[in-house]
Length: 328
Ligand code: BTN
Image (cartoon, rainbow, N blue to C red; front, side, top):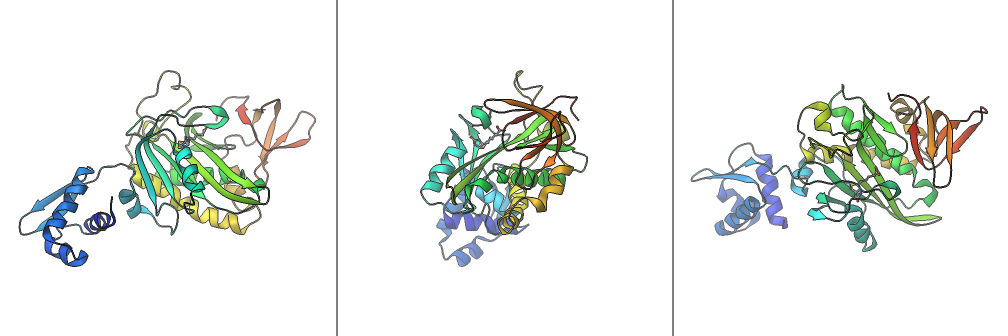
C-alpha cells in the first residue's frame, strides 16, 4: 500500500462517521479523482468503504488480515511492528526476514505471511501453516550482545506471548514449555524459532519467528492430539492484527529491559510461575544424549535446572523436554 493510501486509511480508521471527500483532498493536497483512486485501492485490498453523496466515505469493514494498516492502530510501542511486510504466501517468514536483515532492515521490522509452504520449526521440523486462520511472523532484532546471550531471547519471547494470551482471558491456562513452546491442556498453541547471525562478541541480528494457532478450527489427524488453537480453547474467533500487535506490545518493553540487564533474572519469577515443567519429572533429549531429572527451575541465563537421580543440579542449555508423568 502506498503512503497516501495508508494515510487515508488511517484517517478513515480514526473517525467513526463519514469523512468528506473534500476534507481528504484538502488534508492530502490531492484531487477528487485521486481520492477516488485511493478508495478504489483500499477496496481492492478487501476493505469495505461506504461512499455516500454529500457525506463522503466511511470504513465499514476490515479484512482481518495481519497487514500493516490493520496492525498499526493496535500498537503501543515505538519500534516493534512499525514496519510490517505482508505476504499472502511465502516459503517461510524466517527466510524472508533473514534476507532482509542481511540487506540492513532495521530492528523492529516484521515479516508476516498469511500462509507458508515451508514453515520451519525447531530440530528440522515443519510448521504447518494453512491460510486465513493463524499468525506466522518474524521479527528482526539487532541486540548487539555477545552471541551466548541470544538463546535467552526465546524464553523472553515466550513470556511476552504468554502475557498476551493471559490478557485475552484469565481462564485460559497456558503454560510455557522450556525453551520455546506454549501449550494448553498439554497441546501446542505456539512455537518460537530464533535464528541469528553473530560473532562471539557481537550479534548482528536475530530473527524471532513466531507461529501461533489462532482461529484454526481443526487439525490434521496426525496433529489432533498434540496441537490446539486459541479458537478451540476459547470458542471465540480472534482478530489476528490485534493479537499480533499485542505480542509485539508485550515483547518490546521486556526486550528493552533485557538489553539493560545482564540476564533473565527480572523475568524468572514469571517464567517459573507459568512453566509446564516446574517441579516435574522430565527427559531432555539432546542430539547425542538424553537426561532424566526433576525440573528445579530456570537459571538466569535461561538454562533448565535439572536435579538428577544423584541429587546433583545439572544446567541444560538446549534440547527437547518431555514430561515423564501426566501432563498438567
Ligand atoms: C517450533 O515450535 O518448532 C517453532 C515453530 C516456529 C514457526 C514460525 S511460523 C513463522 C516463522 N517462520 C517459520 O518458518 N517458522 C517460524
